[in-house]
Image (cartoon, rainbow, N blue to C red; front, side, top):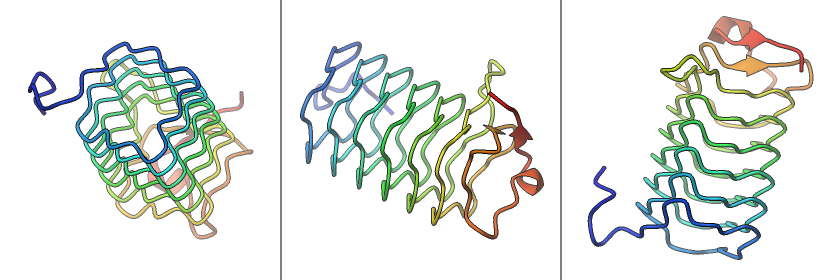
Length: 164
């Protein structure tokens, strides 16, 4: 992905705390290290956006398109990702503690540990009715409060039980 392309929105390290970006078209935007704490990104198009290291704590991403987005080491703590499309998203090392991923599409998403050894954190996350087919959970952390689809066995997917 060439985030230096002049056609790409450059919002690297932008401070967008509480911003209303609902329905915004941010395809391929470079939001690396941006502070989007409590931002409203409901139904936003963030397809293939670079959100590496971004702070999305308490953000509203319900129904957002994050297909192929880079959320490497992003903080997505308590974010609402219900019905979000995260197909083939890069979530290595992301903090998804207490995030609502109910009915989210995680097909082919990568949720294992990052290349620096930091694991994706899913403690207390809600994954009920999420589409997790072909998602890579190996090495991701969960706890007894993490809610999975009924037939999902975290141990068989290489996840690690870790209490907070």
